[in-house]
Image (tube, rainbow, N blue to C red; front, side, top):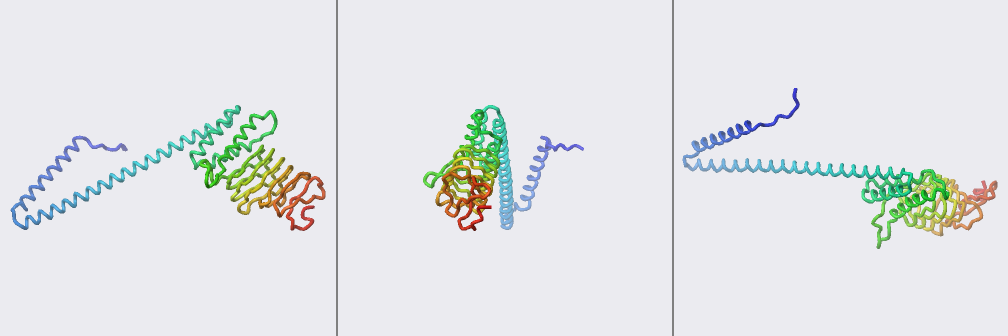
Length: 314
């Protein structure tokens, strides 16, 4: 059996038109013969028929308008869907190209990939967290801080700089128009050199087992829901002055501070389980102090000042 739609031919349309004209002529002749006598009751009947005909015609017109509006709405929805599909295809193409650039052996090409991802994140908010995840994943790739890797270090610092620029909300007087709100960062196991996230607003950060080299600064930064620094290794100077750990999910269990540390006098943090290499000037939160570890004289354990004396010597 054929499945092709049947199309009205010219002959069929002409026959239907002639039939409608004939029906109209017969109706007119019948009305004239029955109601054309000029009697008052005939005039009343004609007026009633005329009113009914107007109502029928008006109803048909309203139905036609409703059908036209429905067709217009359907066309508009199709257009919106086509625009959405075209945008998604364009984003996918740009994303794929930028991801390919990050895998290049040439540093300038990798830099171009980072900037392309930055533009995508700025223009397409629904894809922003995915792009941030890619930047974090790139920084989690194995890296050795040596002179041989100087070009790669510059690429990585560029990725860090992009995050820094877009995670600062700015002030009320001068808000940052390029701010990326509600962003989650995952630097688990990464090696980060000179990370600077000062005065940023970050929903959550995970730095489990992360190695921090050179000056690391979270000064004035707000972590709204979670800050996981468990087993992090801070090799050099650390600045946590004015840092806000929102919620109750900040943790430094197993973290090691091997250089100077400054938490200032207002930062409140949970440092239970963290250790510090002795011999450096440090400012801990008001409720915390270093206590020596009996079997490791070069290390001290971070302990609350009101904890029992043996809490930091186990």
